[in-house]
Length: 158
Image (cartoon, rainbow, N blue to C red; front, side):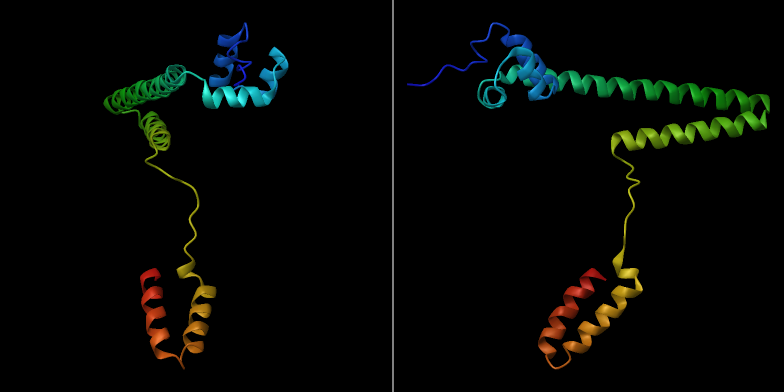
């Protein structure tokens, strides 16, 4: 005989589901509604209406689009200031507007995922890699077929 889901049977089920979908920690929901965290996890995995999850995702997407829309509006305003300053011959204001437009474009690129400013390390260019590669090649000198195969692989890497 299967047990009844305590969350499905709870008088405040809709409020609980709203908090689950909204990302509220299970511990906080459990304390607030006097239910077990395991019940919350099980309910979220097995009984949470798909439509409720999709509605939350749609809301989050709409909010993200709203941020981009606001950013585009700000970009337009900055470009307008730039045009007016150029027309008026105000060099200092032109430079400030250019700086602002560049920052806005950079932010927009980051938000859209077109710009990744995380540091990248290229080990192929490091002296340590060159030394290690040389040691490997020397160690494999007695085994020419392995050296050739490894050379091809290392050649692909750089």
